[in-house]
Length: 265
Image (tube, rainbow, N blue to C red):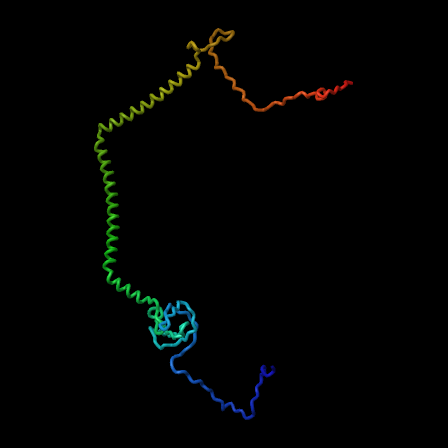
């Protein structure tokens, strides 16, 4: 154990450090290669055995500098092996499209740039149809708005015409007739109020008459003058109460019923 923790090392007397030379390892020819851990950036199918490799599956891959550049961005090549047949699969980075490019060993299940190119070609053919469809929708919307605005304008014109015709029919005579009608209506209202007041007075007078139709009077002692008798005050009826009174019951002589005679002192 002591040799493992030694601090001083033995140098022989004939040791010459100038004789020591740095040894360089032979460099490998070709591009720089390193092992990295990665996940597959897209789903693929092995061309050898037909194994399906889904997107996101982890591999220990070899990363290689391809020596190719796109706008001073270096492209890298990755080598992985199929999980079933161990066939080598190669793909590269694609900075131009912001994606990866399949090279060999497998085929990509979906390539977005092909879909994009196909859409552009179809779009070039169908641009006229889409433009016509958009134009048709715009025309329909504009027609709807125009019809709505036209209806609002027609309603406003009808209202103006009705108002003008009413003003035309109303002349000086019509204005005077209207004023007279208003005055008559006001007079009728006043006479109605007077009629109601007269009816109230008649009802009050009849309240002080007797059965013969004469006004009720009385003679005050010591004075021969007749004075009207006041209206008798009707007493208010008593409010019924629901309280029960306490009834005292006579005690029964139970001794007499049993034949017991109590002697009086």
